[in-house]
Length: 196
Image 1 (tube, one colour):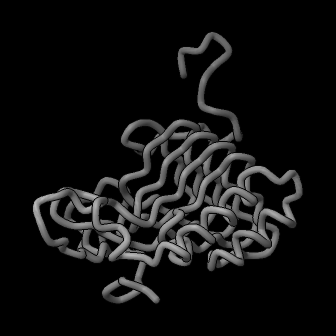
Image 2 (tube, rainbow, N blue to C red):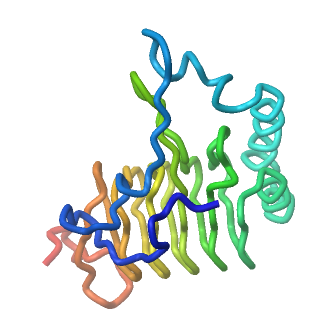
């Protein structure tokens, strides 16, 4: 099930020296011919499976009930912990949703995308996405394959998560980078918006 070398979570966001980084966990699949790898998607996954996944993804995105959304995610093969909240319009990977793990009480915000694949020119890559217990992903964030979001971590809205997020950290931006919080639970800005 896992493409991980050792299954540990010793990397840090933005640390290029770590032996256990997102890119190190991706599985590479070369594709034949001169076309880009997306042109060969039917060699990667059966058409019937992607079609069924698409229907279940649609259910997970639009039904108002959290219980039904989590049911659809589980039918896709997503590992769904206790009390997961999957936001409206949030989209799991349609090709390899079984590579997503959502920890207990994780929150995936409105219109976010969790990708477990990358179609490139000469190859496609696959990797697991793990969202730890009580982690939160803001609205419209995109998480790339192979990323691990640690327990209690927070991903800001509209962020692109290209590296692991350590437990308890808050990351924002494109690409997402750690930010300091002032400890009182707000966003770190003063009333005048200066951040001081």
